Length: 263
Image (cartoon, rainbow, N blue to C red; front, side):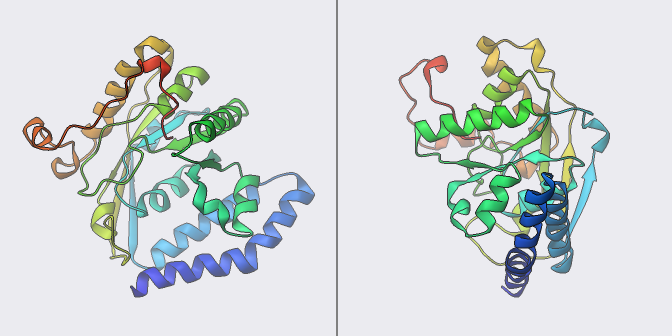
């Protein structure tokens, strides 16, 4: 609990005393790079302060231009470990609830963060359009296509929103395997433990080789690449274990008629 309180305190102080000045600077200069870079530096500092180490593998696989990073999601530690190490500006989808925090909300919108409302088809469509606009402006994007954190650390089935964007924008997808974060802050807990998180960037997937009709093939390809970078205890559950779980109700629409899935 003490480590979690330290991280919360660092973020609160940065939001209250630093962010307003950075917002003002961004508005005066028309450039948000300083605000974004200092924010990422604050996240890195907070993690080091509580003993969370981040080891990066495959940085050479990140393409020089805009792309979409697709990662597994097991913990709130994931974005704190993963996003600050990417050497470029990102458009970052976040739950709409985070945008209710005063000052922070304005700064995030200014920095090209994308509010996501999974409960509303209309809001999901708006988020998709906004993300596509940022991609067309040259920003990269980070996405967690599982839609929610894994309860046991194992990768779950990917949803389609990030892949719809990648196919429309014709941008490469970089598979990202995040290892060990669930041991430091499991889903349902609030106490951060010290330890190491490994972020592995895999070989990019060229979306120009896929048509919109091939979306499921693209999803399967990226799922396989993300899973390949994970240790056995984080890879998708074996088929026999999945068969024991109650089947999820599938929507009646055809794939091309489904609303955009969570980013």
